[in-house]
Image: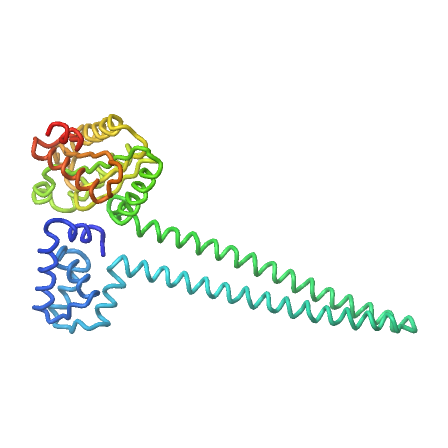
Length: 351
């Protein structure tokens, strides 16, 4: 499921979006299978998107929404289906390469066996040789067999070199597919799936090593109103800008991701609370320092600001609890005026 829709299903309006999709499916007479639900929830979430327009065309034309139609739409429009296709294709190619290599090795083994037999016969002939002509014939036989084995070995080496290059190409292709599956297509930083996996691992590492770990959640202020005023394309421009600032200020081992919608998250490993707070203030200040312009018309979009919340990992705390506390700090920033950073620990101390 595309990252933005997947994130919306995890937010407060997720159940309403799911119900809307099911209602739309029922009105259209479409069975609520897993594939159909994923297609329909993307349709109702973004009716003007490529998938939404195609489903609208099918509904308007009265074309039956069959299982084959659903599978075709999923293969074309759902990233997860395309990822599976990539992996399946790469697996098929790899299987063909391995089969070819196995065949080449079998041929080489057969040639080596024949060569061994030839040497055995030649050895017996040499033991029984009585004249020069028979000796010359035996040597010629050995020379021919040796040349054949050398030719087979060269062919095998060339085939193995080709296969090695092809396997390396497939490995690079699969690595690119893996990166695509964990990268947000709009902002080009990590997506929610990659964030969840990294946070789980980072918390486990911190609990084991005793090193500090902090989580920050940042949210663009008044983004819905901005989208309603300027449109989604300009909103996407803002998302890319904010992501670029956060990414530029999150060198490894920091890890930043698009958490969902207009929310971003940053994992800080081995840094103090003061370091984390200062980094977030730098991001917040840089984001608000520019007056953005609309690309299409050059109009001023005004100042973009973000609110942020941060929380330090407690001993034996779960990733879910850490996220909840960082979210709570974020909403405290929203309640107290926006365009600010709030620490969950400061809230607890004040209480």
